[in-house]
Length: 385
Image (cartoon, rainbow, N blue to C red):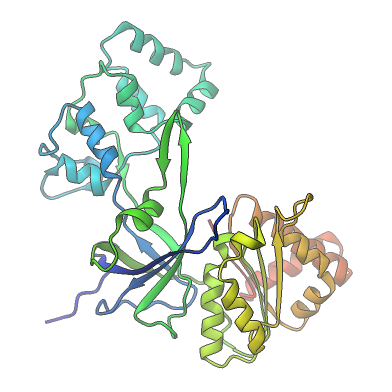
């Protein structure tokens, strides 16, 4: 009998065997270290790959939606976007198959046909008016589908109609924070747990709180599969690595260091790490210090933005060490960035361009071409989200 090949369409039910808080008391953040047991799955990851996780929605939110739909949860539905062979129960659809956040204008276009009270109809008409785009965007930004049911209680919506307004609940990808060579039967994750408040309601990141709060330790209930990446340490262990990973962007570089240590790579390693406060948010600080003591981590430059009046970030540390950074690049080092795509990665890219121009004596266009060349050679890699 052929072994099961686990993938997106047939994920492996893995166990969480470790779940610990990385931040110290007093931190404003909640970052967790998770160990996912992959033993017996046949799943293998290469250092730098991602682990994809299918989450479940919060039971309390599912229950409230059922109550507001006046449904039991046993009703059979066939959400069109799931392309199922057979109907499933409404409760299953809401719990594990469909996303309950981020309603769109399409949902309000539907809702206006179902609301029966004049006040609700007037309010929706105002939101959907051609000149109300900014108001509509602000309204939707603050709400999830449960809010729409709560705020327009006169709407008469069937379970099938409701699920047809929702999108598929997609897997979330997390950069693996371990080496596939060092830990062939485990995948370590560095998880930022998302909690916030909008429209007077406490919200939660669907997957981060599923892993942090709701998935029990030691039970094979977490659906996962490996998502391959082109992001990884140099195949040539003699090459140097410059790694820039603030916050949870540190995750793959923990895997890089494990990989380079276990394989006996001789290239130098330079890590730039940043977060809010050294005393509470220096993720894996004991591990980095051990690598430094052993000479496996050549340089560690940190940027803790809230430890002084003027905020300092990883790109500032890069600029402070421009000469040496350029020397490493000139000697063939690989340059890696992991973390926030919206701001950090752009700021790091701008700092790299400026350093190349200044230290290499290049005009701006020449510096841009140099950086493009690094990307083409695979020496400038980004894992940003």
